[in-house]
Image (cartoon, rainbow, N blue to C red; front, side):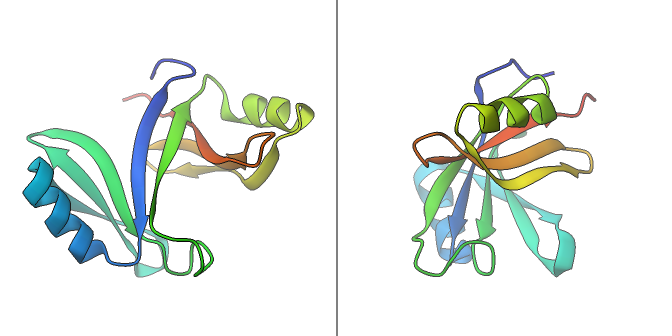
Length: 126
């Protein structure tokens, strides 16, 4: 299990995945593997050698068009469902309730009490 309360994963939400892949490949030496998503979408896992370091995805139809490309962070928690309940009790908002991504983990998209968006994630073991 990933350590509780630490940033665990970051992903780039962009409207030009190919341009972003070319940029990060040239600047950081990342390579990319593809992971199929629901609805025929593709998630790109940025690799540094054999190590996955970040994700990239097309933001079209996921976030409103006026939202610019941005990096989005996920914080590892011990229990997504319990932490979401606590977050709501302390003034945070649930943007997308907890859901499972097969082979990855349980995730919720939330906003803190100031409105800042973030992801909470409990990685699946193994």
